[in-house]
Amino acid sequence: MQKRITTQAPGRINIIGEHTDYNDGFVLPAAIDLVITQNLATNGTDFTCNLISSHYGDTFQFDLRNFKKVPSGWQNYLMGVVSEIQRQGKTLKGFDCEFGGNIPLGGGVSSSSALQVSFVYALNEVFDLNFSKVEMAKITQKADHNFIGMMGGIMDQFSILHGKKDHVMLLDCRSLEYEYFPLELGDYQVLLLNTNVSHSLADSAYNTRRSECETGVEILQKTGLEITKLRDVSLEQIVAAKDILPPNVYDRCTHVVAEDERTLAATKALKEGNIKRLGELMYASHASLTDLYKVSCAELDFLVDQSKAVDYVLGSRMMGGGFGGCTISIVEKKNVSEFIAFSANAYREQFGKELTPLEVRVGDGAKVVS
Ligand code: GLA
Image (cartoon, rainbow, N blue to C red):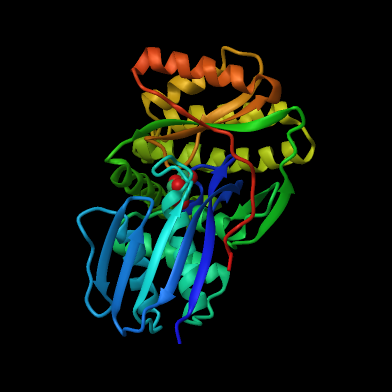
């Protein structure tokens, strides 16, 4: 008998805590109200899978017994998930799936993770795989590592699966324990500005950053410190090791450790309703991502700088992996239209390009729709 399901998975924002997840640190993400919707049904075959993307206006077929990565394309995100499920010894049969949605692609709100999560969620239901949410988060993360070659952390998948309307979550990326906090910003709101820039070398630069952090840990271990990740290290310990850390590694480590502290401080500020402090921490995060972690780009820096020229923005920073994508800003509600126009004009004048504003709201995590 044919089994059919519709699932949906949202994109995500991250208030603060960038490039901390794969260092076992803290992040403060939330799911948003933009989603990928996935219709998936068994097709009566044992091995034939048909993928249909209304998002990309494209179709693709593969055989469950024998498939491999295509040079580049959305298919890899889905085949990577299938490959990971098979690695776990689970059996799938032929299926047809079609996805679409309203998350901007490559816009820094994790459309690819939303695609993978909506897909694994649908497969989980249709083939009775019995994966928990945490297991699904890990499967999609490993799909990126093993099939795509992008060594991402767990933040995107985890927050997309566990999102809660109107709440951000403080996620401990080591224990995967998390706590929800209402995102109450008073007269202010979150606004994303998509630079519409995505740099093709972003994945390899991301992997390089990750290995620079690992190099830092290895060097620090040799000094006798009992650590496994940068999460275990204090700023004092990094400063004390300055002479033996290569300058780039020193900078990367400093960012990660200070960003963890900022994330905890930002959570405290949010709890206390101190939005001004939250904004300051976001600006500090951006400066560190630009100067120490070196994952920003001219377009992102420009938009963050512009926001400092007006008094109704409390904080702004690049969001996500970097090298393009969005800025996230805390803007006074009554000035949002003015800020969008101000930023868009300046951006056009500077780069001859259009930005895309995204007034996202915080929504629920992935779910079965029908
Ligand atoms: C990307 C990755 C995440 C995280 C961010 C940076 O979005 O997928 O795991 O590392 O970059 O914070």
